[in-house]
Length: 103
Image (cartoon, rainbow, N blue to C red):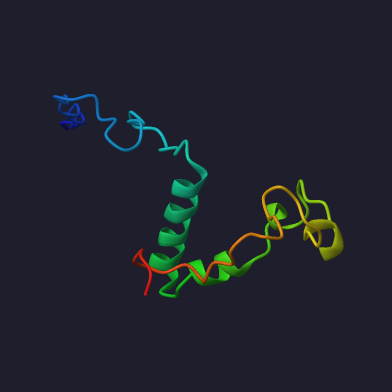
């Protein structure tokens, strides 16, 4: 009885790291969270036959809650007095136009 030994993998001419590091036979790991999410969505859609991304994209993630935000009122944010950037004798300009010049 003759036992076949597996052939050795052919040697690459390049380092194999074009988009992701070559896993050298191990599981491929993406160093980017977006790449990992997209690949997981693709595999889930391919195996289930259903769109997966819409459900995932509509979920609330922790980054949407809170953050370095300070709630303030419009009275605190909007100026209602005169300052050096907006003198009383300034000419009021019309809304911005796509093309400069006066009409």
